[in-house]
Image 1 (tube, one colour):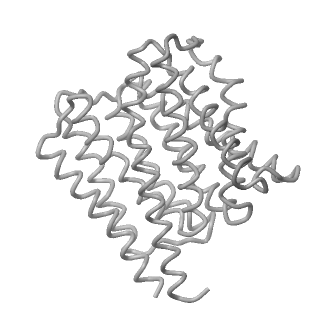
Image 2 (tube, rainbow, N blue to C red):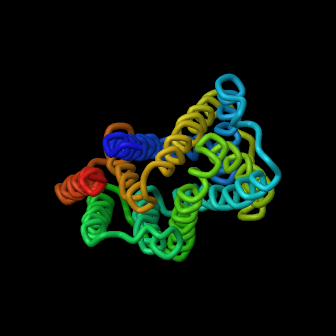
Image 3 (spheres, rainbow, N blue to C red):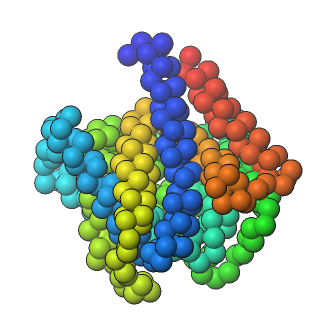
Length: 303
């Protein structure tokens, strides 16, 4: 691959990461509306990936049937390993959102880029530069300022919030590292499809064991919201993210997804009447600076 092609591929990877994060930024709005319609978080955690898996399976069956073919070893690796990581993240994220709200969940979730950056060296051999670490610190500071700067939204760190939010962060970091290792080997299509299918199995088995709050959605609005939730934030966003992990380092992709709270804050301000204070807008400015900075620095490092 030529130097120019390598740079273009890396740029595409960052664009895919930010695009995936932008779609994930709508998750809080979807989840809050579904909870208000009486759909328990455990039910959302099971049905959201089921909807996403259905979209993925149908899409690949029509456009790329080779993505459906996989050997037994690959099925075990992607289905069990990826399924466990993705499933744990889905359940922890939604229960945390229900228990302590979107701001607290986002604040805890975005410890994940620090975990990824610290683990990527020994696990993947991707040792971060000092510039990458500085950009990470700037971005995480921005995330926390944007969370703490949300108006009329209480940020509460209770025992339940800490547990589920921390689990979401660890699971998110785990499947980022997993995707970075296996997407180049199996391709983004197989990785996202069989990890999502594995997550469906894991969640169907274990979600009811949590609080036991499983109830079928009632009404067309809830089902349509679940369809959109699964199609946008699972099928499309996960595919973009795993494809990005074929192209760029795990730490860079993880930092780029910090665009998620920016989108979440803007959507919450517009749709949920949750505005931002000047501190919150300062945080968003820092996040944007960090996300742009990691893309530009990686492009420069690529030559």
